[in-house]
Amino acid sequence: MRKYILKRLLISAVLLFFVSLIIYTIMRSIPTSYVESQARMLSMRPNSKPYSEWLAQLNAAYGLDIGIVPGFFKWLSNAVRGNFGDSWAFSVPVTEKFASVIWDSFILGSIAFVLQVIISIPLGILAARKQYSRTDYAVTVVALLGISLPTFFFATVLKLIFSVWLGWFDLYGKVGRNYMLLDPFGQFMDVASHFVLPVMTLTIIGIGSLMRYTRTNMLEVLNSDFIRTARAKGLSEKRVINFHAFRNTLIPIVTILGGSLPGLFAGALITETLFQIPGIGYTGYLAMVSGDIPFTMFYMVFLAVLTLLGTLIADILYAVVDPRVRID
Image (cartoon, rainbow, N blue to C red):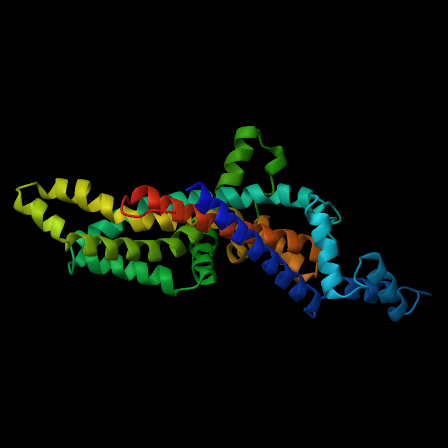
């Protein structure tokens, strides 16, 4: 196990290097440039220097006057020392801005993830137990809707119903207008009420695939020889389902859940943008469209690290829950 983990970490380090290089190359090549927009704005001031002079000066100031490869290694040398620089768009250190927004996304993602598991797995098992029944068809329709319809559709529908028609929640934002006038408990409830619709959106779009996956695996397990043997021995259907079938159904699902680690910290870009929740997804979007290379690099590399770590955790969990699998 130790040798396997060490081998995977070495491979992950190599992958992370090339992923970082690709991300840096893309950020240097996209049309949106923070330096160009700043140079254009400064050149429009009265009696200002021309645009070309401002552009050359700002490129030198932000380290963009060198090639992509030398620029990447300069960024990498600073990054390995923990120096990710200052955000160009937010004018604060990258790590400081990241720390101020990551927890909103983590709370949204964690609550939605727990709800997805609580809803999807029981409904998937129920649909498998009652295959081709009305319950199965209803669960399948819900799952397909969650899989096929886009995030912005659900978000818009929820805002239309609960914000416009019923007036229960604000359309967007993390806090309400009277937030500062409330006591601590009132402030907590105000923030919680603004998180309801985003959490509902993330839950709806996430339950479909997990529900279908659970149903498919449960049907496969129920048709296995050891399940027929358990029934032939006279075991109750409840014991067959809950003790034998359910445990074997969870084996592939656990690996999916282990690989969900990046999603808890990655932020939901579309959902956070639609509801204007200042999480890491929304902040990362603002940084990318403004050409903020330091923050975007830190954010994207952070996601890459989580993805590689989540894959490793999923592989280890698979070996833990399934004794037939051995990791060497």
